[in-house]
Length: 358
Ligand SMILES: C[S@@+](CC[C@H](N)C(=O)[O-])C[C@H]1O[C@@H](n2cnc3c(N)ncnc32)[C@H](O)[C@@H]1O
View 1: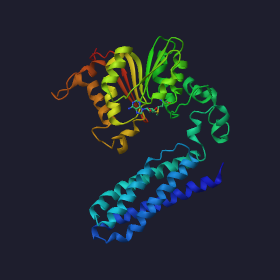
View 2: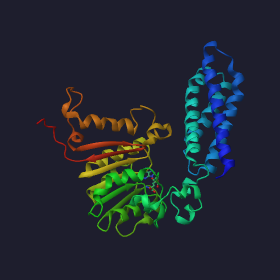
View 3: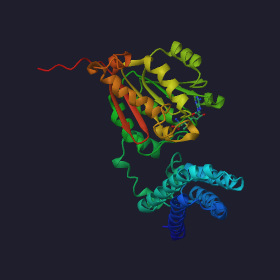
View 4: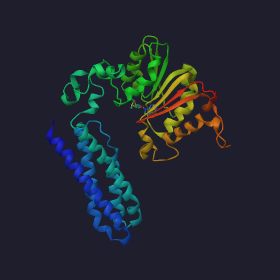
């Protein structure tokens, strides 16, 4: 255990709370129309502090979720500018968002402290083999191979190219995908990166499976091997997806782990869901981007993938609708179920007849 970095995280958490408190006070004083140019220094401090937290997490927590600090940094910088230019209204409007970013960051730091995950290089752990993982004594204790499902086991202990997955995804994959193991299935994954995840699917689904990958990076073509085919193109390019569909026909499983923007996720679903086999599974991962403006997301933003997918629930039940605004569609006839997990949406296709009361 590295006490220095634990202390570091603890200090950050305390300071963050102080800044949040200061911002809340400024909000309260809004009614009194303070001359808040005096706060310019405070926003400068928050800006520098956010960069410090960002770097600290990068250093001691590997691939941390660093978006909150990144946004806090740029927002504090904009607020400083607005203060200089006397744009009081903009400043007041931006303060709640800045508080939100600091709170998000603080929640994550608290979690790191509670879970004892400080000083674990999560990024490295994601794709390196035993030798590197074994340097992380604290964490390795939690990685008992006997309790792992086959995907997780391959990820941590198998020989494979680079890949990047959140640890909690393996349980979701296995829950939905296991019925297809050792069957002649075709799997499509959008987002090839180092090619390791395509190897994982090949191993998991067995000798009769075919794996297809799509990526925008030309070099991903190098990860083709026996029963792994890779197409280069963008998941947002509907003509390109049509071409892939024409060549490949149907897929039994589609995993969207590409660029994660709203347009990409929605265009890909619209183009590829129709070519999923009758009992197929569509899995869109990293849907936390539905809450991140950088990816076109935002809480309750109609254009986010999460909001878009909430309509599937209505489509699933459209047979019972009394409203002319909700009609039976192709989705009503083909979606069997929709599942929401932390950062993943799974749509299972299947025959879905009207319910009968006996
Ligand atoms: C998170 S990585 C994929 C990781 C891989 N599935 C794994 O599990 O190791 C995302 C990949 O999506 C690719 N990508 C980004 N934008 C894309 C787009 N518009 N179309 C297709 N692929 C895209 C990136 O080049 C990158 O290789």
